[in-house]
Amino acid sequence: MIREKDKSISKRRRDFVKYAGTAGAAGLTGLSGCVSMFAGSDGTTLTVSSFGGAFKEILDEQLFGPFEDETDITVQSQAQGGTSEVLPRIRSAVENGNAPVDLLIMTVPGVLRGLNSDLWATFDESSFENLEYISDDLNEYDDEDNLVGVGSQGWLINLVHNSEATDASPSSWEALWDSSYEDQMAMMTPAVTGYMLDITAHVHFDGAESLQTEDGIREVFGKLQEVKSQANMWYTNEANFQSRLADGEVPMGMLYNDITLVLQDQGAPVESTFVDEGSVLGSGRWVSPRTSENHDAVTQFIDYASKPEVQDRVSENLYTVPTIEAQHSNLDDETYQKIAGPGLEAAITPNFEMYVDRQQFINQQWNELIINE
Image (tube, rainbow, N blue to C red):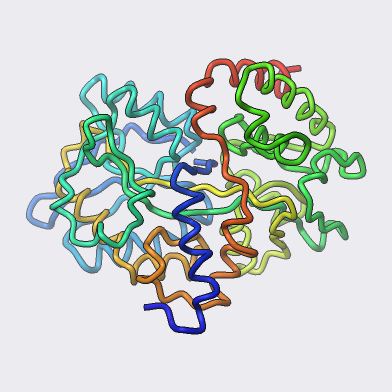
């Protein structure tokens, strides 16, 4: 239970339910063609993929390892690329009756697109003991109300910098348009990864209202084009940027708060800044390809990952936001504020329905105006 003194931040935790129920973030290195297998009398081998770099390293230590210790199930963890890379590979594998992984963390747009292609396995809710602790708004269901995805973690995209490589410490998304940072910024691609359309709309237009029509989206893209001079690199996998940030090769840019704090713990001279206009809020879901043969082990793993003490342990070490209801978390004020800054109600929640419903149009505009021009 949350102690009495923590009531002030309990509301902010509850707000995660409100703001991240439709959220997702990105930055998911490619999936291997490895198909999961049974390991005989020694138990089952479960192939699990997650975001790469420091994110995967911490999950190996704080989630996958302890799960192995508690069960007879072996976890083979893999790093995965962005949603635009992962989904076609899963779709191709599933259509051929294969499963490149048993379980993966997927952003909300990816979950929805997978539903449209019948990619995900469904779960019997009665098979879980700990699902009750996860906010209902952070689980995903298909059109027949079958459970297909369970909330894994939440995260925030911040502005970050290497304090030894630059004296600058930008705290506003306006920095993306600031010519004094020319050729110094790392930015996320594709459009559905860094949600730069949403950032542009909130900073220079009327927020989500500006993204309701194709004409409005075109106008926002026009303004977004102005960030290109500041871009030193466009990345699809955060591991590519985090190494360059840590050694100062690319001094600043957009990156997840959790990854930046892990790099800081590892001794890198990096700082994460919660942005004045609101950091970008997202969350992930545990999903399983419907062709996986390890459904029972997948269910057991998700149930373990949903335990309040496991959620808190991952958050304390990875600095992601727990997806359990506030009353079940024992994170203290200092830890939670390090994770969520001014609170999740201050964050920008992307317009995920737009990215799904207008995917082809947005990808075309992104490639023509931002990347290929």
